Image (cartoon, rainbow, N blue to C red; front, side, top):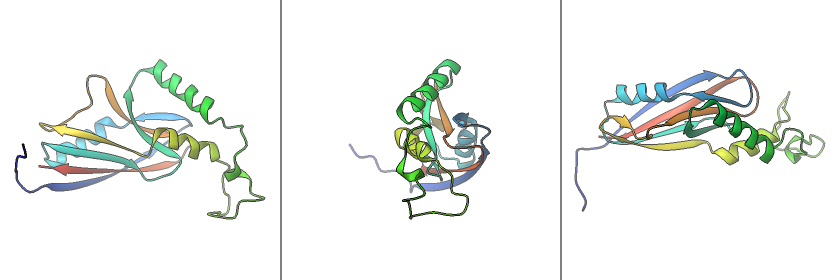
Length: 154
């Protein structure tokens, strides 16, 4: 059954974080929740997306041993010391700039985790379950990272 409601609202928040190491799991749930509260949207969806190709967004439990397990999983699946064509500056000619970093592993890790998450909103609350938290994951090197929060709903 389709239920009609009031016109949908769209709100946006831009967040910025300083990563201190790699990999680093930064719990940004409180900031996303604050943006949701400020929007006044009670029911809808929140999309959280990182604006970089060597960082990721994921929803996971904030448990230190699990976060270390995830770091280990990333290292097993995209090790830093493996050969990446992206890092072979003798053959790579696309999207190069001065001081280009050798970070093929970070791009591969981002593909494993993804650049965004969509979270449903019910009654003004993020539907994360009992243990779910939203993480910005630094995958390359300490630097400033930008995250876009798009909130759609009523």
